[in-house]
Amino acid sequence: MVIIVIYKNIKVVIIGQDPYYNYNQGDRLCFSIKNGFPLSPSLKKIFIEVNNCFNNKKIYNNGSLIRWAKQVIFLLNSILIVRKRTPRSHKNKGWKIFTDKIIYIISTRKNSIYFMGETSL
Image 1 (cartoon, helix red, strand yellow):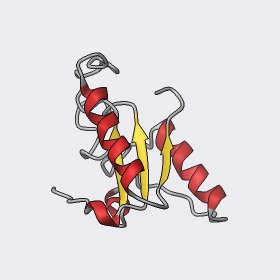
Image 2 (cartoon, one colour):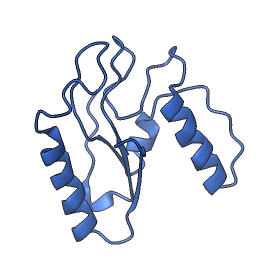
Image 3 (cartoon, one colour):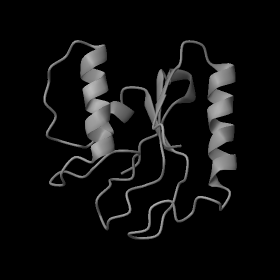
Image 4 (cartoon, helix red, strand yellow):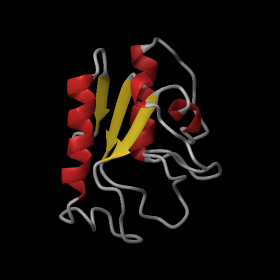
């Protein structure tokens, strides 16, 4: 699966900590979970906030965010890789420098961008 995010089309940036660390849980997008896996606590919180912001009472039972990525939502983890079953295992490996630069470029060159992220970052 390849999803290309067109920089000029980005409207929302959702920033996560690091990829899911359980084998085969994620589908290579930040917060996104393969069909058949239970929603993570972080993804549940995101869905609650989306429902609150848009007065939507939809109940999500599918954790795939591919549809969001196709709708100009940029999903980015601050750490891009992780060891199996070891959250934050690559925290001090330089990923934050790279992802901070991406966030800086988007926030300084684009107008009307909404950022959302975990508080534990």
